[in-house]
Length: 167
Image (cartoon, rainbow, N blue to C red; front, side, top):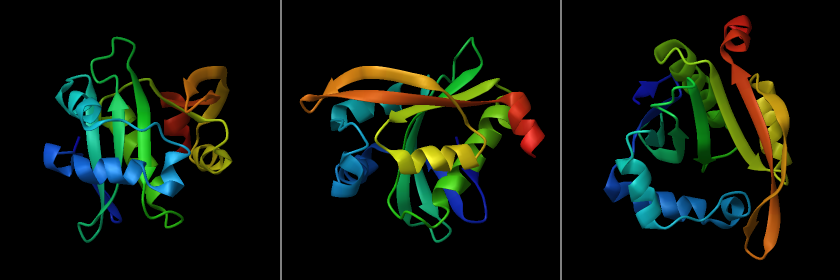
């Protein structure tokens, strides 16, 4: 994937950028809402033809985040936004990224659904997704056992007809 708007550019991650990715996901602010993956796990995502590991840059070319999408070879015409981590929060970068990923999913790929899940404790991100047209599908209670606790996940999605209505 290679897309840009006035505010951001999204491009594929190179292996040499994985130190940045791991540092970003393990920062104190992000680690409570993002599973911590090894460099090996991130390399597997980069090498998998069904996924895109993406770097998000600001208008000046500075790295401001990363994302992972899956389902590029989906027979169900469904993309999963598996992970998005933005370093500089409250500057509109998350909304800008969501606009690009929706455009990519529904206009470029002509897929039917874009979905995601997130830790139920992350209330802030849920309101971001709602503002950007995502609908809550439900919860996966105690889905993961991570860091000695169970984590409930919230599932949200947007369908192609909902995307085209909001345009």
